[in-house]
Amino acid sequence: MNDLHPDLARVVVSTDQIQSRVKELADQISTDFADRETLYIIGILKGAFIFLADLTRHLRVPHNVDFMALSSYGKTTSSGAVRILMDLREPVEGQHLIIVEDIVDTGRTLDYLYRVLKGRKPASLHSCVLIRKQRDNLNIPIDYLGFDIPDVWVVGYGLDFADKHRTLPYIAELKRE
Ligand code: PRP
Image 1 (cartoon, rainbow, N blue to C red):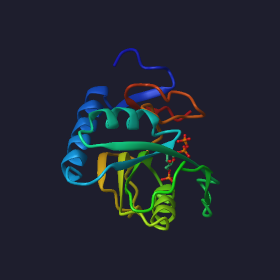
Image 2: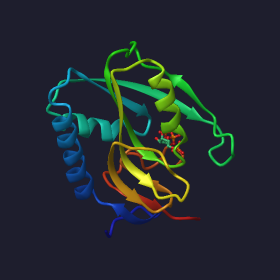
Image 3: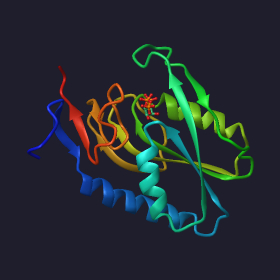
Image 4: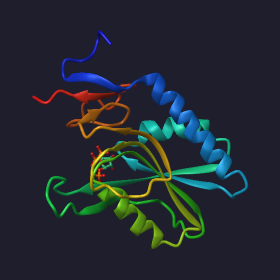
């Protein structure tokens, strides 16, 4: 691509690749949940808002949408504690939940969400993640996965660097400097 922003090194997942994979994920979820009651889609802010908007518009099953916002302390430290900044508006006991995340990096956020949401006694709990960074020690189950990518810093399609580049339609690697 000739018009890449100077902060960016290369496109990692193109707009066309994202759009066709998001449609496939929505089709798979629609098939798997065809005979269930209303799905409860939980988007994790901020990063998931674009993926969630595209994914849910392809769903062919009834669904509600709600959001959580989380904060993680010290991603580079061993503590990596996660806390809830904004919670769901309603109890989810007995609901079929799907967590929608833009990216799994260390896996701590998704692991925390599984524990918190399981504790609320849903009928089922699944995850739909667009991007997983390939790391040796990452062993967290993901039910619906868009793409595996190398362990590089990426931006676009919801992902940011200091809140920049979130609304790019593709996912690109950030230059190191
Ligand atoms: C990103 C992403 C996930 C989390 C994944 O959020 O949206 O929620 O990091 O990282 P982990 O697997 O190492 O836990 P971030 O903290 O950057 O916040 P943002 O979505 O508001 O930008």
